[in-house]
Length: 65
Image 1 (tube, rainbow, N blue to C red):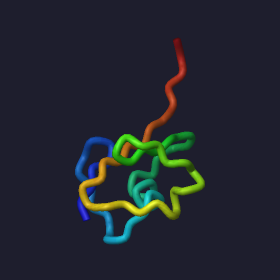
Image 2: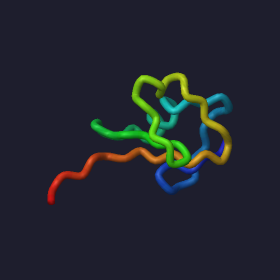
Image 3: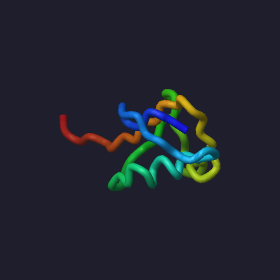
Image 4: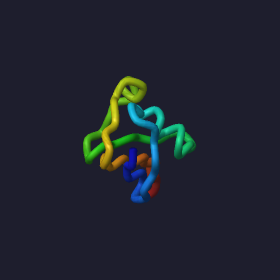
């Protein structure tokens, strides 16, 4: 299924979870995840299903002032 991952089209397998999207992008921790503008707690990454067309953002914190 096609999703948007950090603004780019990505192909994930049917039945993919948030954890699959994270594995696809392989970000360096720490980071947060939002699906369709809703932050997903880390405890739900392995169980939160994704749907075709979802917009997934994997966001690293920014420091500074």
